[in-house]
Length: 239
Image (cartoon, rainbow, N blue to C red; front, side):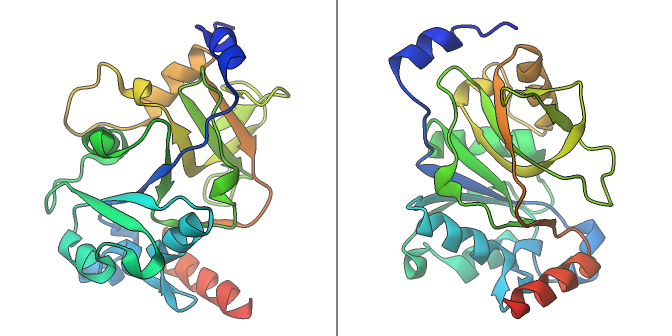
């Protein structure tokens, strides 16, 4: 496996903990319609809070207070609702992609890159997870570090595998990418501005042996449909 300087860098320092985070909130939420026709998906509520607020509160509790949120569909509503984040002890900045012009995951992160530290944490705005973001870190020579979970019913084939050494690989029993990862700026070297997915960048880094990860066995839910939103709401109200 080609580690491209990973051993050399690891000898110089330990795992790197992200101090900034990005919450992906630019999706149109087609599967959530009609709920998302007049409300951006991250502001849909479960357990008495907007989905995105659960992320903000968990990040602040982990002392990750510098947060970047990208948006497109009804993005002004997100800024109006969350403001600068001061009410939660956060410092929120926004990466506006323009109404109806979402840049996909890769393009959205690239546009926001000047606002993000290195490394940085990224969380999908439409997942809920009980993972402590303060525990996440990346090896100095890696380009990405991914959280994987058991395959849900809507993704039975999974996305990636995890070997015994904690390396994300393509071959083996597959798990589902949780939409939570730590990335280095160098993952986006050579990328041009515009819309593009993140997955090809990850697969390229995996092929070079530069992606680590973990199997999170706690609670996680992809809140992609009204039915899953209702299920999450019931779960949180029972807590």
